[in-house]
Length: 129
Image 1 (cartoon, helix red, strand yellow):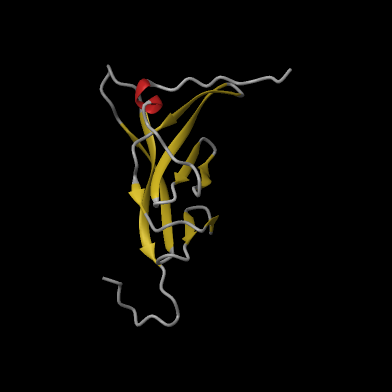
Image 2 (cartoon, rainbow, N blue to C red):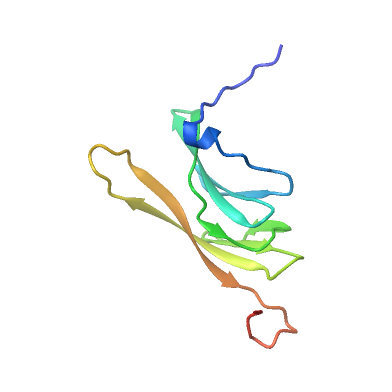
């Protein structure tokens, strides 16, 4: 008999229909994964832990849209390379930020991305229109 883990989703998370075929993912820190869908939309997914056990997965709204991902690799501590055969490759810089919230709200932390476009050696330095 297999041992299954049940991770509850909030109503908002459960109502989202995501197509995971062709998507890529990468860990950005010890509790956050960027899920990059095949259309380039980036969703941060946070693992809520209780000791050593993951008690919940929390999916935040989309934080960016990049190119269609073919490969996703960490370049260094802050930079993530998203290579694409269908468009320009992207270099993202992920930064962890925390926000102060009102007493009645729960604390929010998120990873933020900034985007740099990678050019081929054949490019003349202008962005495609």
